[in-house]
Structures are given as C-alpha cells and as structure tokens.
Amino acid sequence: MQLCKVRCNGGPIEVGVLSGELVHLLRFDPAGGPRSLSDLLHADDPGSLVRSLRNSATTVSRETVTFLPPLDAQEVWAAGVTYKRSKQAREEESKGAARFYDMVYTAPRPELFFKATARRAVGSGAAVRIRRDARWSVPEPEVALVVSPQLKIVGYTIGNDMSSRDIEGENPLYLPQAKVYDGSCALGPVITLASDLPPREQVAIRLAIIRAGAVVFEGQTSLAAMARTFEDLVSWLGRDNSFPDGVILLTGTGIVPPDDFTLASGDEIAIEVTGIGELRNKVQ
Ligand code: DO4
Ligand code: MG
Image 1 (cartoon, rainbow, N blue to C red):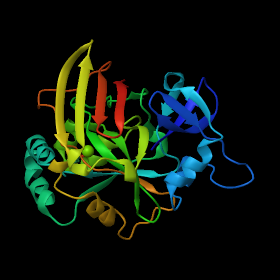
Image 2 (image 1 turned 135 degrees about the horizontal axis):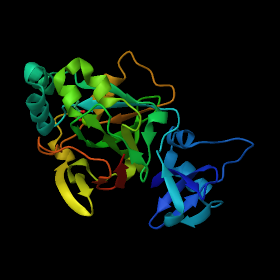
Image 3 (image 1 turned 135 degrees about the vertical axis):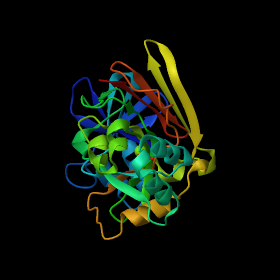
C-alpha cells in the first residue's frame, strides 16, 4: 500500500492512498481517530487502519493532484558514505580529508547528519535548488526510511539529498552548508508501507538527469550494494536521540555523476526506486 500527501486544485492538504492511476482521499473523523499521515504511519497496524478508512474515501485521478512531501513534523536525517561509489567520490573531491571517508566507510559508527526540516523539503514535481555560491552540484538519489517514534521502520520513500560537492570538498566542516539550504531535499512521491517493499536485494535505484530534453547522465545501483543495513543506521540514529514526531532517514547514495558534471538550472532529475515509484524535480 502506498500513502501520499496531496493537494487537489489548490484545495486543502489531504492524505491519500495511491492505487495505480487513482488516488483515494481519506476522510478523517473529526470526533476522534487518526488525523494525519503520521497518525496512520505510527499506528500499531497502519495497513489495517488505512483499509478501514478507504470505504469512505473519495477517488480522484492521479493527474489531478499535486504530490507534497510525505511528511508532517518529522526531522529529516541522512547517512553518508554507505556505498563504495560515495566513498570514492568523497575521496576525490576532498583530497586533504580523504582518509576520513575511508575510515567512516568501515567504522562501526556510520556518518549521520541532519538534512532538513519539513519546511525545507519539497515533493515530486516541485523545484529543488542548487546554491548560488556553489560551482559543483549534484543530486543524490537515496532510499529514505520512514521511522516511527519507537524507531520502527514503517515505510519507505525516495529522497534526493542535493549536495554542493565543491563546498563539501573544500573542508568537511562545511558539510552542513553543502547539504542544508532551501530546496536541498526532495521526498516522495509516496510512502510504500514497510511490508510492501520487495525484498531489498531486488530494489534498484535509478537516476536520470535530463537537460533540454536529452538525458545527460544516467546511473543505476541496488540496495544490495549498500555496505550497511537499514536497521544498523536506525539504531545508531536513535542512540541518545529521541524523535517524538518520528524521523525520515536518507540512507546514502550509490550513484555519483562523473567529476566533470554539475547540475544546471532547468535540469530535470528523475529518481526511480523499485516498489516506490519516481521522484521527479526540476532544478532552480
Ligand atoms: O560525507 C558526505 C556525505 C555523503 C553522502 O551524503 C552520501 O554518501 O550519500
Ligand atoms: Mg547523501
């Protein structure tokens, strides 16, 4: 089952269930029960709860809705250097600090960093941004974990961890500036409930960057290439750190365009993940 947050024709924000080309808009009971996407996700059995609400849903065509980032008040965090390709890219861009990336790739403690507040995230179809003071920017296509306040993985979505490689490469202490800025994170279009994701070794991640109608970069990886497990990342994130609203955790990129590539305004970024869908954003 796939849940989404949408807006129809400029109307209110609604929670829906995506089913093929249709979106079933759920009606919440003002007298009690769940009232938000997070309430559904953090319930004991999200699947049954959503099924019980579907009878009273209104159905619209997918074409008529705007997909919003599928989160409420969750913080967005991210893991880094969880694929060999990312380790190599970091070593290339930051000569002076290359050995730290090698160390973190194999250390028990992963690299985890704060990525975005809900306000900084955009949904599929909206614009992501490259920093005005960056010369070398790339998208990072990542599987994002939807984690409950009890640190249970309740779903999966697609994340784009937009990054300024020149700023990150100049000095690792600049990482927050390379990673956190307005429009630096895209999420969506939907959350696939945890029980409905295909086995992880079958999950492919694909990235295409389109410029003036032509594909200028494409790449592919699979969750099987990840050096860490989702459970390990979540358990480190939850050490001495509580998330009363739940948390979204991006799990790192395994696809990095060649070093002579930088995003440009007007580019389109398409990220496809097996069992979730396609996250598509234009660059501003
Ligand atoms: O250390 C820099 C961050 C790397 C990252 O975001 C990734 O591997 O996805
Ligand atoms: Mg990343």
